[in-house]
Length: 313
Length: 234
Image 1 (cartoon, chains in turn yellow, orange):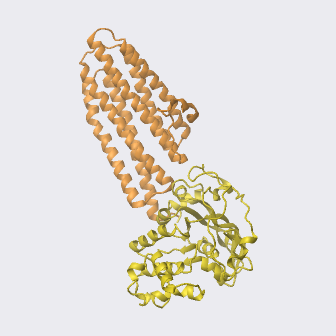
Image 2: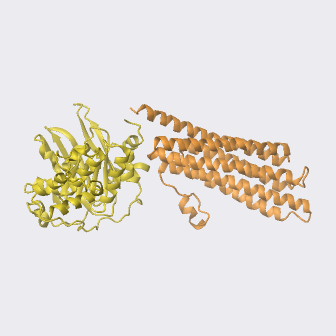
Image 3: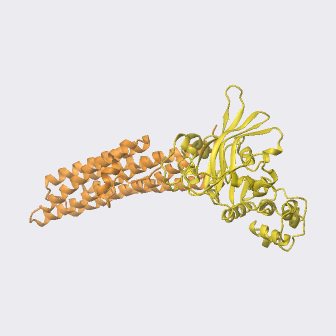
């Protein structure tokens, strides 16, 4: 299923130039998609990674291959990530989920030996074009990590950090309050904004990190196992928060918790480890990308089936 | 390699399926006894069928409990989830089939020890019941082998039961002026109705077979939209 809509390349080129204004979301037409979710019969072959969806893509990934020091890490990944949905990336350790999610906001740039082939288009614009400023990319595409990693500063300064570094205009107090409210943390911390963030519980620290990512006004939130270090109650808070956030943001989440993927996500991509017979080297590929309900009730690929049912560990 | 706990889950699920399918063997035995009781007006055997239905009900409760336990502990997904959903449906059908045997058995003593039997009707009851027994065995085989074609064939088989049911109805209407003969004929209509339901239960289990295999649930025949039947089935 090819996206047939032509996108004017030139008009979006300047989006990541320093000081560029906010990106208007959801402007793409949707001519190529006719089938509603859940009605298509099981897809086969190349179509299996192209489910029909009714919202425009925020990312279009074409033949993405990532290498570390020449060694293949993720090979030939192609699928669209849809806007204002939660997309879960699942798969066993070493299958390239984290490498993949890091390539969505150019975090791999920070690793000198990493090379990226293929294309990642964000609202139609090539994320890896030479004129694109990686700092601006990370402003619009925020990231939250497995372990809460607040700065050793006050709650207020944690949130204000990003906007200050980026020189964002506006009332800082208002920006901090807005980010903490969106992070579902405001009521819990509004009376102790000047206290050190390390005094918060693990779950609160993680929501602080989410709020910190939201402070720079992104439209995508990447989450790499955001709840794996948290208890079920804190996990529940994070998941509730994700549901609220998807009204406004596109969310991509890496999770090892299959039930979490089934609970929270709209779309699921299953990654698997491929072992090269000759060299014994392992890299990751995407086997199946579809609506979450389909993946967890009737997956198209037997490798997905084996993984989600726990028949391979 | 599968994780140890998951291996146990696989085995538990398999055992649960065997347990549920054995319920269909119990139904076959009950149907055979019920047929004997009707053909020979055997009131003793009929009361045995009624008492013995507790075993089928017990099996239904066991399987149901086993399914709830697996769902709570193992959070099954994909083909495991479809199998569990289908087994829940299958075991409910088994329980209903047992109840139809009880319904028939309860009718046996009502027509007295030596009712005025019309052989044409009784021969059709015999054929109908043998057909129901064969369909029950066939739906078990189709389910355990995940054989969708064999499952879909149940619809064709079930047409025979429906045809016999209609014939018994019209024969019973012609039972004449004798009150006892009319009462016996009307009772056989009720017997036929119960057998017809058993055939439908077997078709339902066939539909669950197709669901387990394909992930798509559709009724093989749709009683409320009979005009589209042929296009759906073939």
